[in-house]
Image (cartoon, rainbow, N blue to C red):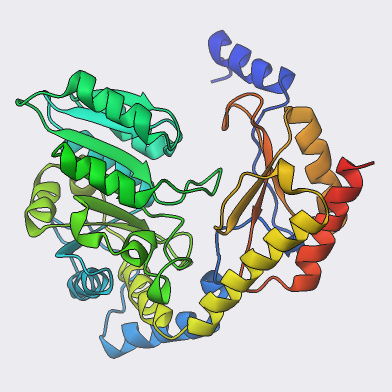
Length: 382
């Protein structure tokens, strides 16, 4: 069929005109300042080999889950892995989803009810927004990390008849910054709200053994639900919702993205299990990542680049360079010099907030960090 709707053609043309048309990139051998593989676990041969050996030892020699977890896909490795994750994160329970997107869509479409209220940070991930759109609850956004704005919304909409869910991220995926966790918990407790925090970009980076920012802050028992995503710090695939046993039971019964999908393969779940165990052995790797983050921040100050960057202490460092064409040109210059730095364009970020997004890793050398920032400085200060 050759016909393609005109309305879709016009939307694609608009993307081309605004220099924001997305394309799938080819793999390359550039120095990695782009991937979310903060600790290098995605390429770790020890994890690869131990996962294979685990499957051999447990006689899990099958390629797929064979069905949803409610039918035939709930292999024993799931229970073992979920129990380990719950213990690692000092949570009552953990429920594995196929991806961070599935976890957020499943949670937010199922948990908040018709008379409830969802108050979410304006910069939360698209998966959270999509889940909220599928919910019957009312929702309002508050200004990014502005807890005064959050409190105003709570007071305007507070009712004895509804639950209020406060939704944010411990480390934001585009800015790399964090909310005031202590104040957020205090606001939640004072107003009897339920706090939900996505920790996708904190796992492997913050806390003892990379357990995340919430545990580092000591507030794991004050959070209604934490979403841990495995495609970043532990280099594999999938996600888990941490919370009470009652929450786990509820999600198993009502989260459609859990119920109506084929489960992860035993190999995928075993990789998660082994990667989590590896976190407990990688103190030096985690420390090296943190040292690289400090070094990156020092170098951007020395090169007079600090005003460009969003202030934070995470592995995500974003230099704001407004304009899709301009930021793409600078990204191409860095890539031509062998550094994989991606331009983040509008509409992924708001117009005027286009940026270069640097992801720092434990395996980046100080020489690589210094050189990529020198190249940026040469362009910016030319």
